[in-house]
Length: 358
Image 1 (cartoon, one colour):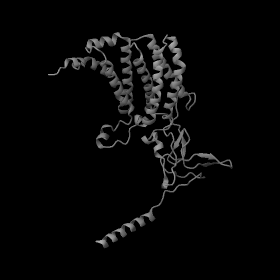
Image 2: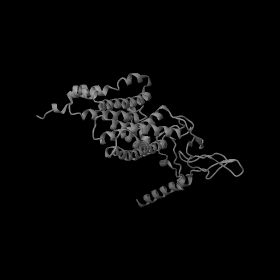
Image 3: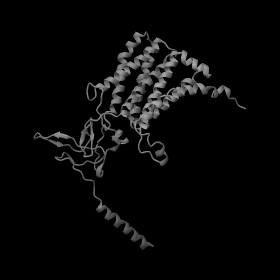
Image 4: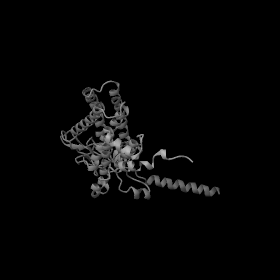
């Protein structure tokens, strides 16, 4: 028994010794090079730098400059493509989220929930601030002075989280190749939120003065916005890729169900609009269909809220339908008011007052 154990240990050590001598480490040219060569990792590349003799050489492997990303030949190429329809809708979604968060906080912190010129002025101010900050954000990005954008195409989920993919070839040193591979879809949202806060300080006091909305009731939505935008920026910084794109879904059942759902934000906005819509009607004291219909039509505040939910729901349906079945878009849009009518018609069957315990 002892001899067999000894022979087994000798065999294992021999195999390990042979494998160690047959393993070759990852090789790449370190430092600047005259001819473009490969780099380790997914996002490490080389860009041209000026040399002493007036020519240019390729830099050492590292992150690409802002506005460029590494291509298949390990060279940093400029982002010259235009955002796709879904990229634009994702940016619109992030802008709309900030606006809706402000409107919701204004409604929650206004003493009188009924329509008034003071409340309207605060809502209008938030809308103007959002539109101006979004426009300025586009104007200061390439091409400068235009509402168009130059961007890099989003290829996979890891493009949003390049900081998690810094290579460590041969366990010698970590190459810091983190970059904005989805330029400018990641940074532009932070710039928009920062400009929104700046516009808040510039425009909100003048709008409050114009609509005679002063005092503590006018300042509370302003303070709420100062908390909302950092929270939204944090959510975007952590969840941007997951919100925009879902990839690598595991499991055959999940893959069959969500095979076409590469973008998550349409589903998110549809679910949020449905939940908010139901909460709005559920907050009414009288749940009869006549009372719900009358309060929706007679009260301007309720009518604006319902129309806003329709627009939000329609936005999500457009984004989702353009990805799944573009030819069905016109028919799908006719279903936008359906949740409202279903809630009003079926409210008498779900009224808690009609249920009793035995």
